Length: 363
Image 1 (cartoon, rainbow, N blue to C red):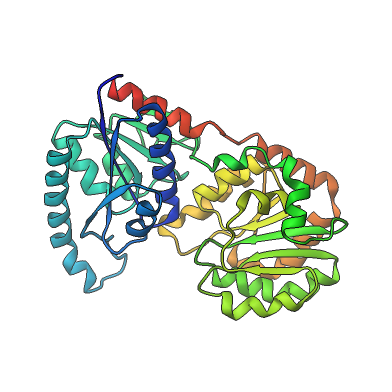
Image 2 (cartoon, rainbow, N blue to C red):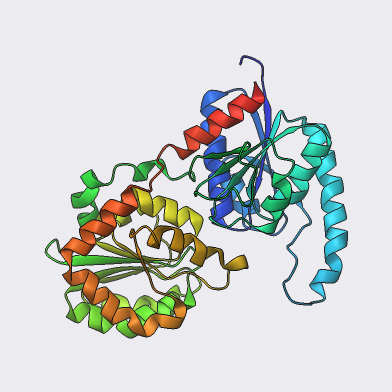
């Protein structure tokens, strides 16, 4: 297509919604160098900072989610929704997009709804194995729905749906060749096994407390630890750097080298993390967050665990940690099985495949 195209992307609230939207925009930019892009997010959420850092313009809507329990905040919700719909209509009329892409989060609801009313093509990218309320409602009018898991026909129309996977960082597609570089980068002992702990960019209090209670035991068992505490907890746990073979970080900037260094990984079960871990192909213990809406993370983890591709440790079962980890540490056949099975779930071409579907809508 030669003519210039205008494209709106809406997604945010968490990195799990923002990162796929930015990846899709980057891939579209390769295809359409003259295209104009506009992101629509929720005011005061992290997308208002992260999207400009990625080089894109963003407009903010006054929108939040409904609290699941009765609170005063819920009284403002109808006003926020009306305001957001009004502004979404104004943005779409002014920007004149050929397609609007939603990757989840509060702002994507009003934005995609307004787009459909105005006759603009829409595409939803659903990251989770169990969709949220917004995407379930939007799916009825959407032109195309890109999903990352099987068996979503009970939520979405099979005719509109295509399994593409979730966009992932391209530098993760080849980490085997980076093992030596990774060991040097983290100053690790090549003779010892390495455990990587990832609790998300802000951190996970429960996982940090678990690792703190087990850190001496891990060191005694000759295990090195790369521990992302998250920026909220770094000052509390950085003292463990004094232990031999323990490295604490508020945030890990080189995830390619982090994964290359890992023999085992402990992780939350956000959709984006799972998509990355499938590509990385290392033995994983998932500790899902129980505080996520509709218990998404447990459902995401089970979609992998049920295929013998990872281990699951619920927050209510953390007393089992030593037993589970010791079995994994000492059982090479189990390590190989988990690695092989999780790799088979990988969808490394997700971003390209999503963009192919967008191109069909544009043309």
